[in-house]
Length: 153
Image (cartoon, rainbow, N blue to C red; front, side, top):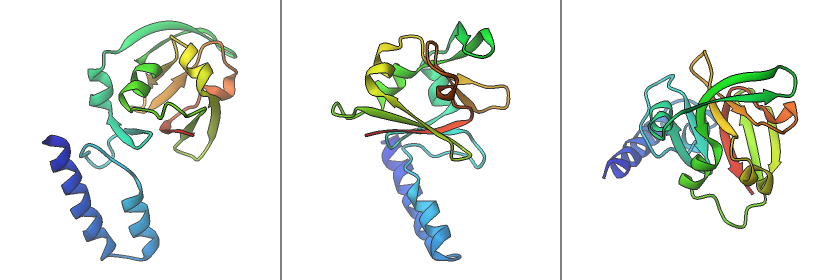
């Protein structure tokens, strides 16, 4: 019921936004999939079309792990396990690649098999209220900062 109400609210907001401004703004407003209503400025991670707020992620049960960063060495990270979030987002079983996308447009493609095999990969909470990828055993490019979206293909 909560998701239905949230989706109706999002649709109403999208229709209202479509009547204001130019077409590019309307497209940007309606293009982001969301399963929950969020406050302006709230951190949201979209995973295969499912939106997770910080509260949603924290409710999954955060863990704190010391992981080996390829450039920074052993560092403590707090966050949620990537595989747990992927399971909740119902990633297509035929998907072979994950794309980790940052707010600035940077993206890193990762084999789904590598992600699945990484029990300690985290979506970590950063000090600025955003999210970073903590990807032990992977190159530093996989440690995407300010991640906002994960897609599967």
